[in-house]
Length: 144
Image (cartoon, rainbow, N blue to C red):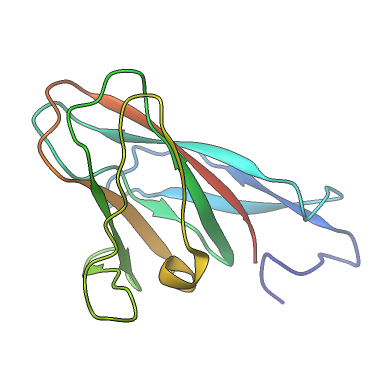
């Protein structure tokens, strides 16, 4: 049974393991026995100065349902990239085949359409333009 199920018939909670957040060492969502499975959790994704790609989030059997952006932000849009192995990346698309590219801004919370990003194990946010300084994004995650 995956992380969204029960461990020894106890609900599970996802917990962040120590990580650098890059493709070789993604942020990993793991299970902790005895916690509420429906609890929503947050994880920090980092976009480096002059970069567009965030650190990598290993979702396991969880899904992301929203992203909060910091008070200072260069980009006004972002896309979501997903991967089955953390190495090969695919841009999430809408039903019409166009990139799933929500609008973002300083101090925005953007709920994600789960159908567009649910399923793949690895995920990263790609900002529309390179960020002028390092940014910390908050990913909201929960078990599937």
